[in-house]
Length: 205
Length: 201
Image (tube, rainbow over all chains, first blue to last red; front, side, top):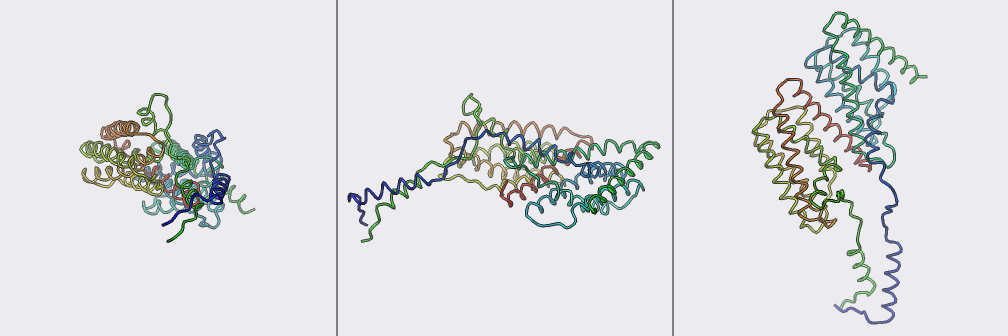
């Protein structure tokens, strides 16, 4: 192997090459303050409570779980965030789910009706209902990350807030042990159902 | 004889030797590399989520699983970290990192009956993966074994505290709360896979 280095022409070419490579070498721009990292968490945390349609469904899952008793009281709030995340994953992958807004509104109507009617159903049926609607909520809300924010922290905030809304629903649903509480719970179901109808009206008009 | 054009060598040398931005992060505590390493988990939610999930799982599976996990997790993290420190390349496989805490989150949520040695093996595998990632990332930013020791001591302390806490839980609702936490970890993992596919994660 023979290498030419000493020729003046080659030296000039070397210098030119180095100059061009330095000129066009990509470098990271560090001239920004990393303000979006923690912001991602708070953005995710606040996102579920920013839409009443989402809040109604999350709380309704907790209410219905409390109404159904064990094991639904904890199985439904475990299933919902996981299936919601699955829906979010579909959205992020660009896999479309038809009728998202209608699905979200119908989730309020169906969950509200189930609470209103104090409907008992097999555990697997309840899981399927909740899991089905969770996909719509995840697809719609799980993908709305603001630019520059940390996706991991956003996801954590989003899931924690959703779980907390379930917990609030369960907490409210514990009044089910008293007679007046059972009535109040059914009344809450009618409110959720009315909310779902309102959102369905909005989605269809 | 084959001639090599003179301009190729400096170009190659420049590309190979030019410093790249090391995206591995190590918070600067101002207290030295050990504490810089100790604070690493505070800014690495993917490491932290998996660590929390595996120690929750160990705690759910009982005291023996907890003891074995604390030992196997810390040791494997340290050994793999030392290997990573000596690697010439930075290993960064975000999908593997996400998959590890997604699987562990699902296991916590469904809480299957697992032998303590199986739990400890899973923890060891998790420690190997993240230790290797941490070690190679530390090498890329010029940090040494002291920073790795800081990370591993923090892992040890967190694993010890969480698994001991979960072992001490006896009321049914408290164990359910642990499983709910596992489902949250799994949910974050699924969303992160989506972000990864989209190119944001």
